[in-house]
Image (cartoon, rainbow, N blue to C red; front, side, top):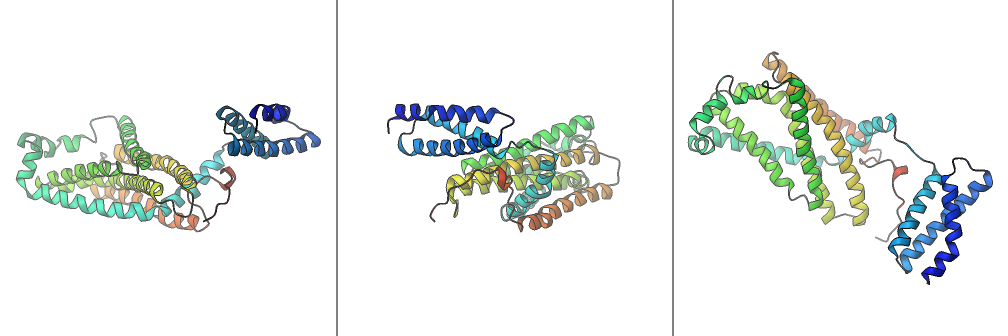
Length: 334
């Protein structure tokens, strides 16, 4: 195919399609013409891609087809309905579908935390290799670093700091999925080790009850969000290796969009955790009350993920955008 002849032959049609796509109102005849020109431009794009791929012409036709499709199907704008649908349907469905990844990660991480805490708490030589006796005393004494951490800054500023830090950790776990999920493991191990060492240190000082009273109110929800992010990151990495019955490109597109949605949802979850950490953890409430608030928040999240998520997933939802917003896929042989 002669590219110059092809462009000269269809140039007028493309210009007409572009002009019609920009109009806000069309007559009946113009609407019919728009649809016909859009279908032909789509055919032209496929013909160029299949015979003489030209980056410049292909880019022009892709833009033209996208604009034509928007004019034919009608522009769609985001609304509060989309936000409501995301948190009521898409996010819980994605949480439920990925449960086989993040629940085992959570159980394994907690078991490793217990082992590290026991090791640090029962072996003085291990504690001495981690911190000097002076540093250990400063960390664990009444009003020391472990306790003062939650109250030495204004609550609102502390909540923002905690939220930003935890959201960054979760985002790292999600983004690392494109690297086969391998970098997720050291991020996860680092958090588990820090938690285990902290519990072991406080247990050795006989102040484990205080530490758990400071940790549990926000830590249950916070850790769960990190485990979910790690699970989704590993799942995205596995999708690259084994896309299943879908093409690898389709699988990555679907799972990538679901992962982006998961990042948005987990940001909201971590916001709740940050508020608990800034306003509940250092509050004057009795320990049992603070722990109860943290447990209730965790139970509500698990009900949201596993009960509501199961219901929405049974309807065919999997955390992707609405079907009308997805690209059309060409059937392929299995």
